[in-house]
Amino acid sequence: MLGQRDSEVRRGSPKPITIRDVARLAGVGVGTVSRVLNGGAKVNPLTRDWVLAVIRHSGFRPNAGARRILRHRAGMVCFLLSNRDFLHSFHARILQGVENYASALKQHVVFAALHYSEKTPPESIPLPPILEERGWVDGLILAGTIYPNFLERVRAIHLPYVVFGNNVIADGRLRSFDQVCFDGAKAEAEATRYLIEQGHRLIAFVGDVSYPWMRDREKGYLSAMRAANLPPLSFTESHGGGFREYGERMTARIIAAVPRPTAVVAGNDEVAYGLWQALARAGVRVPEQISLVGFDDREEALLTDPTLTTVRVHKEEIGRALMKLLLEKLRQPGARAVKRLVRTELVVRNSVRRLE
Image 1 (spheres, helix red, strand yellow):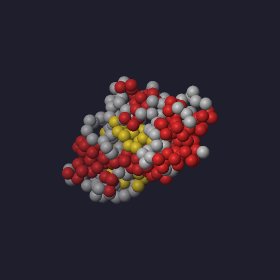
Image 2 (cartoon, rainbow, N blue to C red):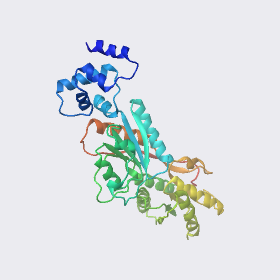
Image 3 (cartoon, rainbow, N blue to C red):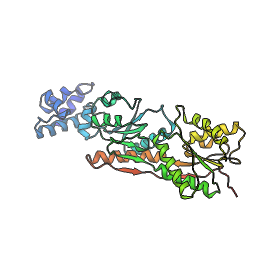
Image 4 (cartoon, one colour):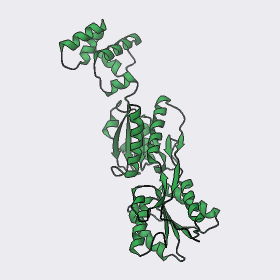
């Protein structure tokens, strides 16, 4: 019976099937179809099942909220980048990993960005329009520089979310959350030990530790220096400019240090690139006079001459892990928060000289 009436509607009109057509085919009122589509509880279960069957077979194309009800999910997640330029190359690679994993499972990923202050009240942080309409996305992947007030804002809309944890600027009020991250302290300790193994004893760290991920990396550097009974030398004051400019600014202090370091561990590749440029202008050769190690393995690592020894962060792997974790949370709502670690590795190139 349904198939016969369905075909009659299709032959009779080239226009898309409307909610009124669905109501007529199902033998119910438009209000009943609307309540089914919006998840209303005051619908007889048998009637609900019948209306949903009509919707599936009639060719009716409901809105995003209805698709969510029919399939239990919208099949779309939002990658939300906060307080970063569009697109910061590090996070672009994470997004690529998210997209690769999602597309293999026929999931869709939409990108959105926003900027806000850490002092903005949570309820005053504007959300992208796609998050204001319920039913468009199943969950969120949060990246960029993330403050606790934004996590409070996200919790208030009751959407499942996972976080790239290394860039969360946390405080004591922050509750546990689902995250994927890497161990920056462990990776920086490995980089520092490599320099020690190459015979270096005067090793400096350069990085703005007002950023929590830089603090973690300095901790790794300090632990390796202490374990080797070597005196640390950190250049870590805050600087309002970009990371490359920060490296350039610190170069004069490194050159002027007595005794001068024979090697520098930079907080990231941008800082290392700034150091390399400023050292070259000052006539100080890398690695003949100062060896240099970066962190992240960004494009800048291959732009220096010599090429930069650095810690590789597997950014696409982070993206895949984030998408996988979010899908797990969608299947098991209410599960305890988890923290997943993604590996790093030291990539040895040509910017470190072995001391005899």
